[in-house]
Length: 190
Figure 1: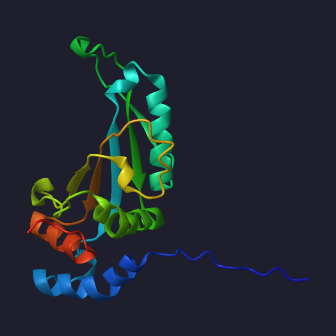
Figure 2 (figure 1 turned 90 degrees about the vertical axis):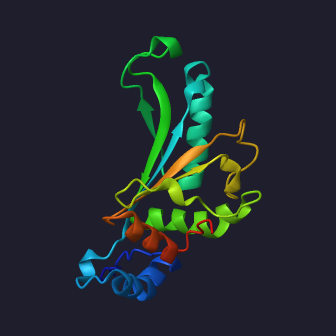
């Protein structure tokens, strides 16, 4: 009996398909880019959550780690203090936050859920601020609560915590980064 080989194809979200078919030609025309390989693209999404309360409450780190794992589909990494600060009672090497770096399929899945599901659930949402760019085309968005993600069970949430989402792109300028993110569906303020 012969073994049947199947290729494990990488399933992308519909936003990735839209990027390939519609956004690439639009960006190429808008910025006058001749080489298709030079068109800005989304490389990774980094989710960062600072937990200063973890110095006194060790269970807070585990609870937020579980919540981030459910939201992102990937286990977060614990970030540690790089230097000691006596006024905060912080020693070098103390765990003070969590970080998740998403690439490829998980990145596109998270991006789709963020744009289509989570951001519309934000109370009194009028768009994300335009001033979150860093000068090199990367954009950072801060969310004040994790409960906007519907896959998160309310029994797991012990306290509302905020976190940052950074979209790392290959754009060289803020205008290229904004054009890319607007094309992908990020609702900026008007």
